Length: 93
Image 1 (cartoon, one colour):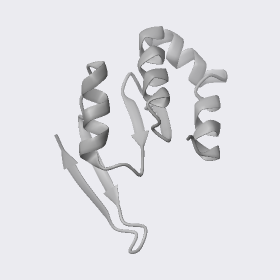
Image 2 (cartoon, one colour):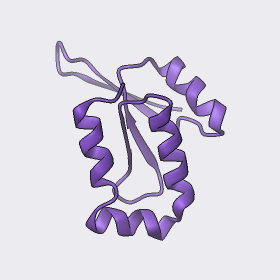
Image 3 (tube, helix red, strand yellow):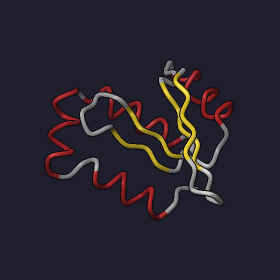
């Protein structure tokens, strides 16, 4: 199930300058992004400079990694944000 916010992010990816960025990097990136959405990841978008794909999810890193493995992608870096304290933890992979 996708969140309403995730649907909004998904729509933004294909409007105006974001659409031009996706087109510039080719529709292969769109195919990967669509596969990630179909796998149920809540927020999927292209980074502002591309062609990296950004994912925001409540799923654990292991579960996200398994989804990525199935389609031939990998985690390049990850952040964990504590909603309780607001702290951010970063780890490069």
